[in-house]
Image 1 (tube, rainbow, N blue to C red):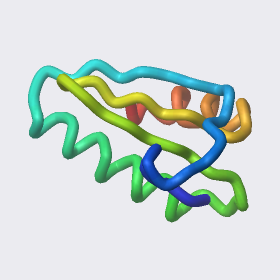
Image 2 (cartoon, helix red, strand yellow; image 1 turned 60 degrees about the horizontal axis):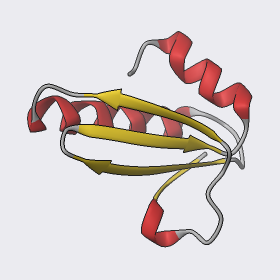
Image 3 (tube, rainbow, N blue to C red; image 1 turned 45 degrees about the vertical axis):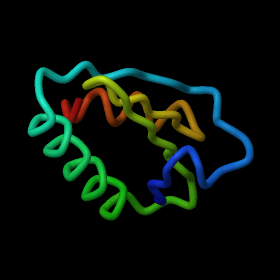
Length: 75
């Protein structure tokens, strides 16, 4: 699975979630875990991310991966 920044895509997938963070350190930790999760997830799907003011927004190309991500508790 690929994790790419919003600036690097033409079309944003539909399945969105937002993660509120209390600090930049927390945001960094979550993005590190997100990158690791994508690397370990055997799929051709894409996850797009963007961030601002301690909020990470993720767009999952396939809804099942959004659910999987939520169940893993990474957010």
